[in-house]
Image (tube, rainbow, N blue to C red; front, side):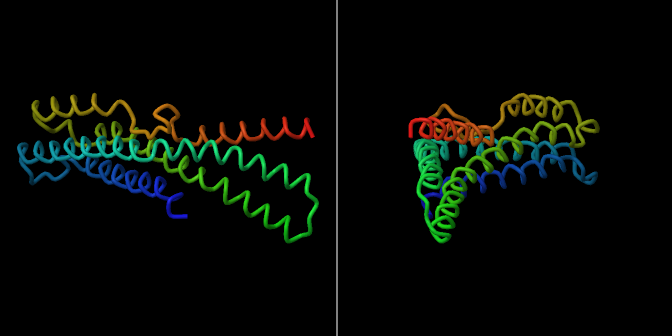
Length: 191
């Protein structure tokens, strides 16, 4: 079980860090007692943290990419086989409940990856909104210039990809479930 939740937990932790960065960025230059130079230093710290998070995304993707893609393939196939067994094998109530709960557990494995991957995409897209929400209008030209460059670097959202190709998101979850159902329909027509 722990190996199945490993990628989801890393993506969840990463999402939490991105949300914390969003909060820090929104609060930039809101303290009127700080000088312009102190506000610039706070902005530079936020930029460095964004760069660190971007590197962390790359490392998490490098470690989890192949495992998640194998899990997508296995879950799609396994869900199909469970559904076929559920309809073909006529068992008692216990067997039906077992197959039903097993089906839910199998689906839940990839749902967690996809849900947290989707949250990471959404939270990282909000970084640009957080930048615009900070008190940049009252700052000097140097602060605004650095902020503009930072805004440009946050235009692409952070995302984890399975097999370096498929974005781990809720739309991917739906695609895996559709593929599983297509295989299920094919098997039901054959049998």
